[in-house]
Image (cartoon, rainbow, N blue to C red; front, side, top):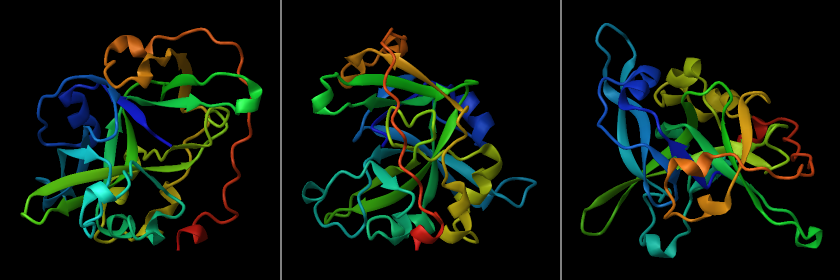
Length: 254
């Protein structure tokens, strides 16, 4: 699950990490929520100067994927996440998995530990960021929905996988992280079919993220300040074993 995230990098930092030729200026955002615009990176149609690789371009899309075949989005659920294990076979995601894979830059994401009602404990929010700082690239899918009057809306979802041991005691899912050396392969929807990139849709290493308890102010979309990421003290939370992955993750995709 990924229901909130943050992006506070500068346009230059994004251009350097993702190999973008140009990016528009945009403000730091500390509490990005579903249905809001998010920045995504995709392959362009032209080749980069002096390279056989395609250009990469950044654009703003709506967070919440709407398949092109949907007649009325008001009658369709909001798809902010897609399960990496099954996306290639789901009607809502299979076309995007084959033709419109994207990267979603982030500075980190928020997750909530929600204990059972019987435990009597309250939910706790966590800010989860790369331990070494910088920008993380979530694997994403994109679709363009067209209305009857011809207007178009670009939409996207974050791919998730089972949690690693670091995050597993907070939540059993986490976003799929694409490493910089794998950007080109993930974005290549011409020669790389879903089966060819199945090995990229695995949990990040256990030591990749820091998990920091934060206040419940992040629950409200109206709260958008940097103070949302200030640590708070909490009692040690009980560890819960993350769900076991399928015996053969690649076979579960098809």
